[in-house]
Length: 187
View 1 (cartoon, rainbow, N blue to C red):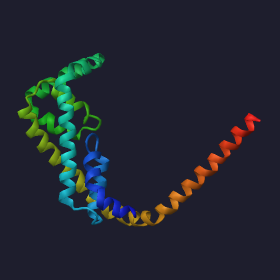
View 2: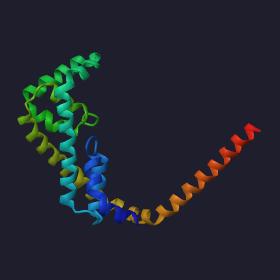
View 3: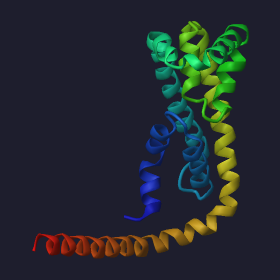
View 4: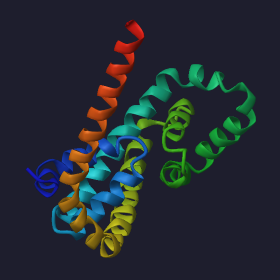
């Protein structure tokens, strides 16, 4: 089984799981796979958005349940946490949708939102809109990048078997070397 058939068979599931947390890279790769014709663009967007929605919902509920205890550990950042929670209360749409696009904020953002006690009936629709916008943008960027990466990926599949065999040979040589060294020390 080659890499293209693996992507075609398991790609959507991998995209959903990969986008549960910080999924920009996996989303870009999904766009590249769509450009190559291995996956369908709309289904890539749906799979990635679904993973993002599920991941953020889980983090949001963790924030509602344990957020104050988790955030208390970051007492040296309490002024920033308070400012973020005030922004969440004033402009929830901006914070919920915008936190997806702030690098490194995808995990702490939903926790903060949950800890701020933003109602689930407000968070869920904003989370869905944010996930769809985010998925469309990053899948499109990956699709456009597929124009550049496509020829390289075509050759990667041909060379992948050689790289695997080379890796196995190096691992075997290193393993024999370590075994001989260990055996020599025992004697």
